[in-house]
Image (spheres, one colour):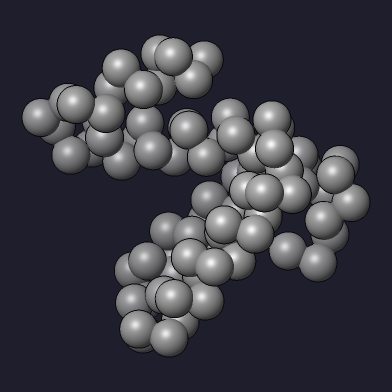
Amino acid sequence: MLKYIKEQFPSDDQYIRNFAEGQKWVATAFIEPAKHAKQLARILSEQVKNDDKAGIVRTVSMMEGISEPLEDAGLKEI
């Protein structure tokens, strides 16, 4: 799955690139949930610090979509 997703990154279509990025996050959440949770926390912290409301919405939405693998790894605080 990651191989296919990586092939979508060079797309000229911003929607495709954003979708591929989201899918990459979902896939890596299953592979390395603890590392992934730390990355998401860092990103969300930066977005809050910079008052990036659109970024916060995207990140929180993504977190909801990947909550299962994170919870399975015992990362319920996220």
